[in-house]
Amino acid sequence: MTGLFARVLFQQFLRPVRPDLLFGYHLLGDPVDAILDFAYDANADLVVVGNRGMTGNRRFLGSVPNSIAHDASCAVLIVATAIMGVLMIVVIPKFKEVFAGLGEGKPLPAFTTLVLGISETVKDHFVYTVIGIAAFVAAFMFFIRTQFGRRVVDKFKLKVPVFGPVVTKVSISRFTRTLGTLVSSGVPILQALTIDKETSGNVIIGNAVGAVHDSVKEGETITAPLEASGVFPPMVISMVDVGEQTGALPEMLLKIADNFDEEVDNAVAAMTSLLEPIMIVCLAVVVGSIVIAMFLPLIALMNDLGGDSGPAGGGGKKE
Image 1 (cartoon, one colour):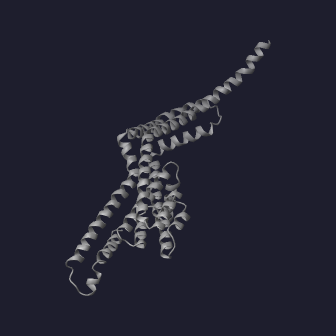
Image 2 (image 1 turned 120 degrees about the vertical axis):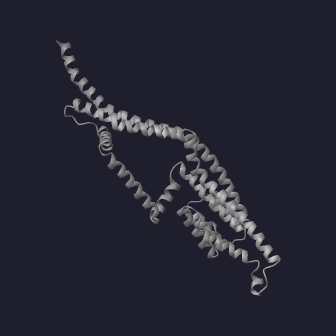
């Protein structure tokens, strides 16, 4: 990635002095000033790309961990883990002993049997459970490093409810800001698209940018492959089309990036404020499900006792 940026910038640096080099002139005076001016402008623009691109990318990925650390969500997560451990290792095995004495050979409900099985696995095979979780994580990490796995995960990131639209906006903002800044700095459009593809951070977005590169290389428009990708919203496609037709493509791309940066700010602020309540609700659902699973056999037993006592009581009244 660094080599690609360096090669493009070096080509741009040499462009003002190329005629002088061909004729054997020294690099003095105006050519050197031109190089320095371009280097200053290009460096400033690329710093803007880096700062805003990484800020936009981390705004979503970095604000959530910060919220966990600073808004007591981390405490909720620790308490949830502790409660689940106590329930699985201490409380549920006690219920299993009670059910063994009250069941009279009758099978337990399926949900209760599932919870008891999970508890027994965690308690009696803790080491194997940890090894299994570690193996699953390692297999998943290996899967996402493959080309197919990365494509599946990146597509899931864009399609997952709630978080998907935010990830999409971050990716589009990075694409438009990088392309707009590079083109406005004098980098040829094809080289700018190549750099943009490499820095997209998402295989789906990168493939869409690659299609744009091929389209521009064939002399076609940018908007057609963007629309065919199914990733970019109609508003983005329309604004890019207007910028392409009016010759103000870099300015239009930067406006799109600013607009999406603002939307990402608002979306992340809303999600981080809801993160802790969502975690509490999830904990309540899990604990409530375990409690229901433990009380289902008791409810069934009470129903059986009520059914057995009903006919006897009715017969006594008739006598």
